[in-house]
Image (cartoon, rainbow, N blue to C red; front, side):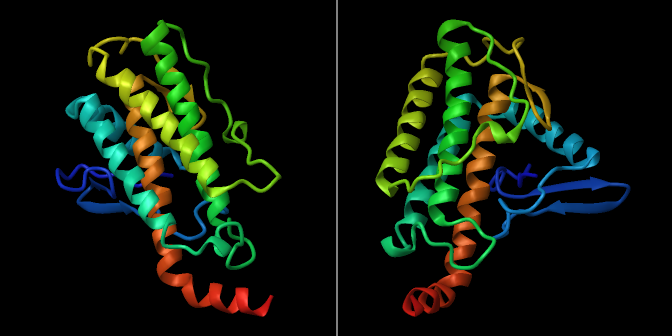
Length: 221
């Protein structure tokens, strides 16, 4: 499940839908986001698909990418607030470490980048994404700088390709997401932005709520 919005000032941070006189808000700023079953129900899928469809065409690809880059800046700023000793150490059992969250973000961003650029640069049909387990974390420790450099490389490739592409091109080509169904490249680009922001918010929440837990955990070792 993803957090999104139609509001001009916060069109990518929270999702509010009005149906039958009621207001439904989906909020994913949770420290347990990557450990829970975060599958969407059919109503949520329909709402989110409607958001992707409308906002991916309302915003230009460059505008969407600029918002994606801003989320990356927030990610760097947030990760930098954690001590190096806490990067690979979960502050409590059952929650991913910062390193695992950043690696998860990097792996999915690489998959978004490769698929979008495959289409825009070579005119090739990207493969369907049939299962979230296609992007598995590595078992060995991963360094902070290595992860952030890989993420930056994906974003730089996306930026170059998007700025060279006619916004209305290739919209007839779609490939499937394991929950959301067939999306075109502008919808996938917006999805990448939403996914990154979800995990930025997750890290920000961890930072706010977990400083004392980390201190206690690290000093007890």
